Image (cartoon, rainbow, N blue to C red; front, side):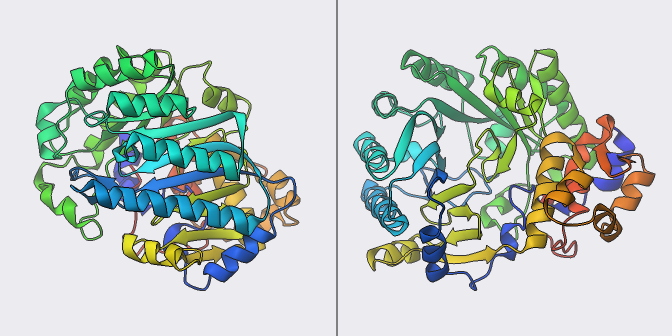
Length: 450
């Protein structure tokens, strides 16, 4: 990574491009009726992925950017689980047939906050209403501090084969500053439980740019994590947006690393993981060379969705739960964010869609370009534009933000083929943003580019 470029571009607030257009552009113009119509229009051979959002935690991590709330009473969680189940039935009946499912992902919040029996019931409902393929990847996000042996058994019996563990940092000073004290021993114990249960696919989530974090503490976290040998790492930069996430006001901004320090931390983590034999996947993922994600990256079939980089090839993502986002060929839909409003919609027998976005031909073209840039650090604009009936020259002329990137050596253009320079790949979001027709840099809605 080049420190001069990190200083020049790193402070800009840009999307992570897990969708295009991004969620701030969704509107109430797309509601329950549009979603119902889109579901009914799904092609006969369509396959889908399912995402279930569980917006509850036992305590708030102050860095968190997710839609979640703190609960002490299990009755609230049980009621939410019943609503989730009813929504699954409702959506499946709107589709009108039992379509194939290749991926299921439980996100949060803390999905394993549910009772084991409730989790098993949700999985049984999905298998009843959808044709979950025997080869389907079923993944669950886990907080190692609260996972129980009974929940691991329920996950095993339900066919879960991948778990994502929140680690963030093993530095006790950082942990206290973000209100997430989690020992290495706790994490190691959970890894052992999961592997003994036959859940072999393990992801670790790490974060840089946290309060009091240093390159040394980042490297110590990587060293400890490597002793547990997960298949994949996700390495994210902390997004400090206290005006949007009020609990982030508990973090002292004076002890947050600046742009150059964040750059050094990200670089150190990436180098350490690559030296340990992991392949860097796109912007922020690392995987063992034989992992399916590394294979997809090598074969140029990697995709990007709301869970980040994925091997999922489905064009349909069905989102369940409060704030959950779905993607269909026609566009995006998002459920009511507030849990009460979400539950009321489902109880009334209507789809919980609160807003969405109907894609235009230009959106689809730009989405393809942005996805290839984010996944491969390159894009054949001639090929992509031809598939969409567009001219590569016109697309390049419209990308005014591309010119300084080329001048600074971040982007190389060979005819209509664009490539991000290897020493500038950490700025891939800046390159993708050059093709974002909806971007408004004046609105501080996103995280820093570095």
